[in-house]
Image (cartoon, rainbow, N blue to C red; front, side):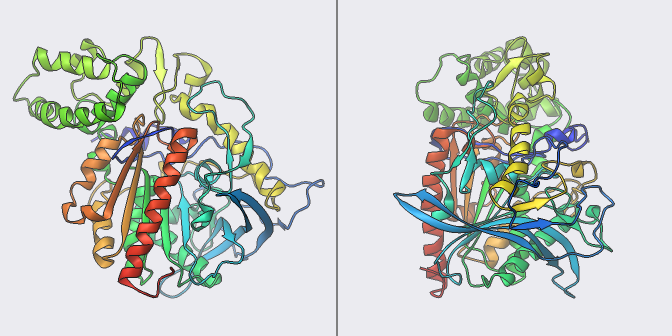
Length: 541
């Protein structure tokens, strides 16, 4: 079995999540190995003699596999801010620094976790909701969600443009989720400024189970330090972070830390069902087909070009399941060959050529990305972006990633000292090579399946609600595969809300999609809190 995304993709591709524009209908996503990371890079960590810092961190941090701190201090920069949001002015406190994650049993120090928390001033800390955000990779810091999605500030990326205005402007975020919940962005060990504490080393936590346990213990520590154990709790993970959320939710519930809701942005819940993990034309790629149709429609290659994308993708879901999937099963089993009629339908429904479908009937996303448009490479995270093969934006294999990565890396290194007053001598690591060392085994599988973990968490907590968010142009975590994964839990379906949006992996980068996604999040939070109150009247009103 080949795991192309786990072994051959460079660290620069083990990253982020994306969003784009207008809502389209029910859907989900899951990102295989990317979790939102961008390019790393050099440069200092921020600060300097001309910057007034609330806290100048003297510690040097390392993302190397064998690195560890001898000891750690829980210290942070604390600053005050305001944000115009929802027709009023919201005053909030930003806290940027480190907490020490401690073991559930024995309370030993495990790792010094870097985080940035935004808390609304004047709110009752015992009842105010709090949401923990993280990207994936593995090996990606939380910068993509932090400066791209629903924090108080965001970068203007111009998605899906391949020639956006640079440097990206940092603006007040009128779609921030801070009006609904306090927000805590946490970096995984070996990313950002997070590092293991001896006798552990960074690599000690580079695995599905060890990582989920560590996040459980980091969240427990933040809640304890801030007197927030009674707060309604939400998780917001992207890409690999959705798998983390599934496993983490079960670990938190089992530890007596109840959740109100889990938000899955661009999901990869089951690596075993995502055909991009395996060798080309060796496994079922049915879950990708509606994404191919969305991308073909974007480039006006389908026949006909749909005028109602939502209705078209509904038809493509049915076509994928009823026509394409049975033929793929026969093809992979060697018991049948596709008909000319089916090949022609695939050409019309996706825009990919007859010869491409003949050469790889269970068509993987890599071939589609490289051969949909002659001489052009589409994005992987956002396939609406296409550039000439051989051009600078095509060099790393994903123009939609390359076009934004250095901007996010530069922005977080300036944002921490200049806006949040946190200084450090260490360059913030947006993405690292943790994926090259990652232990993907989980519950007896060589690669993980988090669907049973999510089901276990929802069984332990009958009030727990789940929101799945996907972009229809995401070739990393296809929305329909996520929907198929969730369909394995029919008894829990009433507690799932599924939404899809125009755009790619990081749907929130698209101005239109971000607005619709924020409205969907508000509705979800209200419903989740109502369900939690019905189950436990002590939950915040």
